[in-house]
Length: 250
Ligand SMILES: NC(=O)c1ccc[n+]([C@@H]2O[C@H](COP(=O)([O-])OP(=O)(O)OC[C@H]3O[C@@H](n4cnc5c(N)ncnc54)[C@H](OP(=O)(O)O)[C@@H]3O)[C@@H](O)[C@H]2O)c1
Image (cartoon, rainbow, N blue to C red; front, side, top):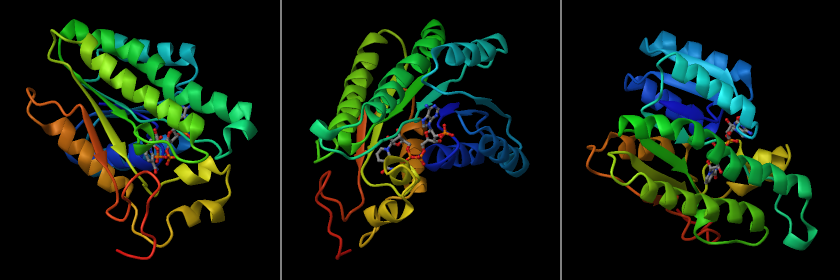
């Protein structure tokens, strides 16, 4: 199984979850030391094979190189988890920052395309495999200041459906798992390192944990081969849509 964005949050929780189930893992992210530490932890705890690579999914050449290494080593993953992604900023569109926009579009859309384009052909050749894309409730409904992040997750939903159609005739499954609020480093990244502002996002209600999302992904991946979840939306109970959250209840 290949997990992009495995150095933190949902990706790291999935690495732990699937290693505990005995899966051999390939972990990609930009922060190499974090991957090294996680890989060692999982090898020690579960005796699984874990390989890592420092890959920025926006860097097409780096993705091609890392994918080539896997293919050459006979380690084409049977499950690809397209998880690497981020929100950057929460500005009104007319006040938006071009660098934030590029970062989100290049990671959340083009990054997924770069990785999928390199690995999916090998699944198609084997006529089996599973691509799981991490979307978001932000891909189902827009919210104030979400604009470009929303657009990237709407795009991902279209790509998820498109991929699913294009592998018709094979046994390949294509799924999107779309969470609402999950407490990870996501908001710290969105607010460019402003920890206090990030914490406030999750105050007054119980958000999902990265483990909750890993549970859902594990369910989707471990279903029998003839069962495909095309799109799963999960939210904290206190969250009723993308921006209606009961911050005093539950
Ligand atoms: N948290 C939420 O509320 C929430 C809700 C819905 C959907 N999501 C989605 O869930 C996914 C995971 O986010 P998270 O909540 O787990 O946040 P996180 O804790 O910030 O983790 C994001 C991961 O993506 C990696 N990443 C970011 N840019 C990358 C790049 N250019 N190349 C390779 N890896 C990159 C990061 O690793 P490095 O920095 O080491 O590269 C990190 O491992 C994202 O797609 C996000 O949009 C999150």
